[in-house]
Length: 210
Image 1 (spheres, rainbow, N blue to C red):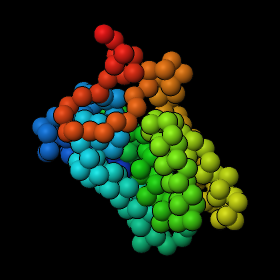
Image 2 (tube, helix red, strand yellow):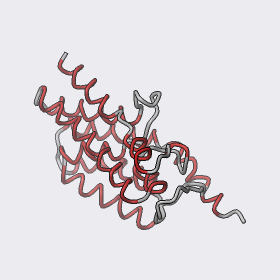
Image 3 (spheres, one colour):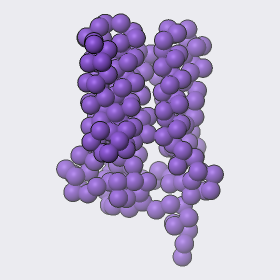
Image 4 (cartoon, one colour):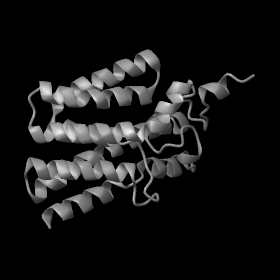
């Protein structure tokens, strides 16, 4: 019963569509209608500008942190913390408030590992930053960062439960990025650009049209 409570509470917190809420409050728009049509911080940056995107990023990370803390408060075991974290990620990816649609789960997963595995988080973040800097593809950076997390968890000698979590979280992130992978292979994926706060968002193919 305790685990059920942890999962339900964390899932509902994870389901809160921060990107949609921030878009409505700051610009009066549904960011699902623009850019990549995603509710995450990257599309929020593209559509809303840097400060709203920071708000989306911070609150999405907070959902993962909240899931971990719910597990720690109710049962206080590593497995309970992981159950809350995974449920929060699932809520973000398949939100109960958006018809079981949602984001990619990257920021929420970051919140989970930031609390449980700070050293791993630091390396994963550096990998993510390097790939974004070199390619301007946030989706590619997120996919690679998710893929390297499980090996890093093993190399740092973290708990076996954390390794299992890393594998599940990486699977969540990569599966949710399937449309991005298809666009990357076609050369149509959106690159991150400096935002001026105007509503925009073209694919590479669109931007090259005369």
